[in-house]
Length: 365
Image 1 (cartoon, rainbow, N blue to C red):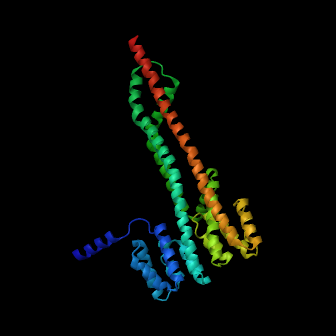
Image 2 (cartoon, helix red, strand yellow; image 1 turned 90 degrees about the horizontal axis):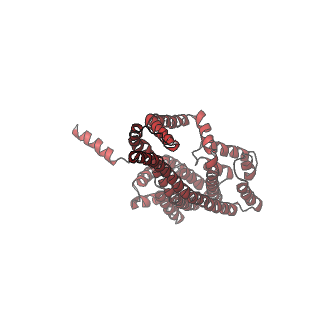
């Protein structure tokens, strides 16, 4: 009995805690190494065994062991990777399938590795651009909450003892403080219920599409989100086109790399339009979602007969434009948040100081 309990405890302690997905940097390195080995005429199974022996990452090794066992049993590469889709993500398994079918697995994996490395760099740049404004915003909110819930109640007692008429600014601040002190928990509860309800509804297909559409169409975020989406589509389409993957299958693979159901439906419509014989630029244009520039760049590639070159240019443009715009917003937000914080603190100091000075003057005279 004790041995069974000990084995269970040992299994629990050895269990991975956190996300099942492999870190993107580790995944990029794995894909690069796998591409090099396959390109050197090493079989997929032997390539995986070589990478397993390197012990790059615990989660990666666990997934690769399962993939190699599936290959040994006779499963196809795609089927073997599909079994570990939670670890690799849908995009890797889909690219393995298309690369294996087209005979360009090495080339596709190499390009996918490069894409993931660039994607990781872009995310780091975005984090660097947003970190300071986010810290400022959190500090500002923290200062306001502290003043309203901790500082103001102390002064309320002082002002109530003093029968003198208070300035309008002080009355406003006292009313705000009183409101948050009385209803703070209720406000937090309403926010929690709202977020929890959205999460629950999003699990149901009939609501999920509507919620995702609403999130997609939020005016402030739409332009930035669309830039990122067009970057992802052009980048992934470039990789697949370079690997000689059929355009319909390419759109199907890209569609499944997105989580937003509304966007998936748009790409499903594009896929159906392609099956009817329409070209890609026409199919994208019919959805009235993508920018005219994006569609024009696709059309240039179709007309010139060199889609890969056009897609590469589009990918580079949208990556740079997305980062540039986010950094610009970040630079504009910093002075605004500092000014907002100064105004809030200044208003509070003014609202407290004026009646305090009046009280001191009343005592002296």
